[in-house]
Image 1 (cartoon, rainbow, N blue to C red):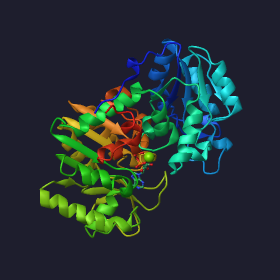
Image 2 (image 1 turned 120 degrees about the horizontal axis):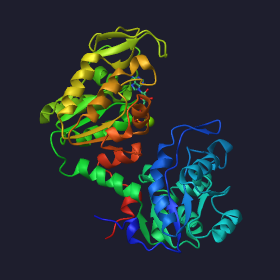
Image 3 (image 1 turned 90 degrees about the vertical axis):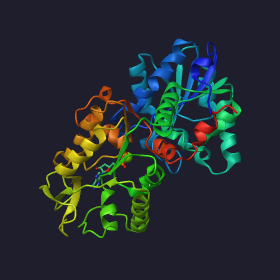
Length: 398
Ligand code: ADP
Ligand code: MG
């Protein structure tokens, strides 16, 4: 399996349709963490410097009923222009007269960002014909498609999948780098191989846990989802987060682990509090003795140290999902300890997931302390689940 890389295309003087993931948090028109915009820069810069005219498609959030100002990419056009050091033309439409005119006027080395591609209902349609119609409008007058929106490659969407059926295409630098890292995690990873999973929901991650179970040497579970594991072992979990409908699935998973001799590392102590609040008073309790009126908000210090010790001796480590409610300083210790362990790994360490990446930055770590920070939570997880990613499959050369 291989695909054409951006550097294999002769882009000079060509019109390149580029999919990026510019889905950044925006509140009242102000951009929060712009990591995804920054991660898109190498490909955009390469295209500009090599004389292409660049038309960027991207999405923001999940608009349900067509255009809505809070989902506009206009603020992103400004930030992108600032980061590139060159103005970015913005079209207030995805397709239509304004977009066609701006595409036609675009010169070599110039960049046009289209409005949120999800303002077109066809973008996410299950109907192949509807998506194809939109893809035809998007690709009109374009010479190449470059796929660099890694965070969306697990979606069979018009701007991710169908456009690649129409135009000669290549993977951008970000997609190529992400896939390269995921392959390292999946095909003969250097051992020991350790995985730490946390975050809020078991439902997001149970597929990955199942698929990785027989492949890893260390599997540590923290975050909000650990309480579904404790509940599956018939422990009291107080008022902690739990997905009751998954308790049976988790029971089966624990059985399966036992059968194949894999030790799932679960916390031995928990930091609890009476309320879900930034100023709630933390107390450390044993994992099998959570008081009925308390909420578990972090793994305890003993568990954090045990997780760190197990991970640090691994040669390949993948971490997705904060170990606790790191947004509250009193409950950030577990996440910080695991992040610290990743910075000390002698082999490859990979951080996946939007909140996990935000957590390490908020907790004062530097991106460069980690082997790789993935931009795509869902896409990475689906890859590690063993699912095929439509936006990658469509790029692959037969
Ligand atoms: P990622 O984006 O890295 O994949 P998730 O979206 O799955 O991570 O989960 C991140 C969220 O999980 C964070 O906002 C964090 O506060 C929350 N979380 C972690 N531990 C707990 C807990 N014990 N109870 C409730 N929420 C938790
Ligand atoms: Mg998240």
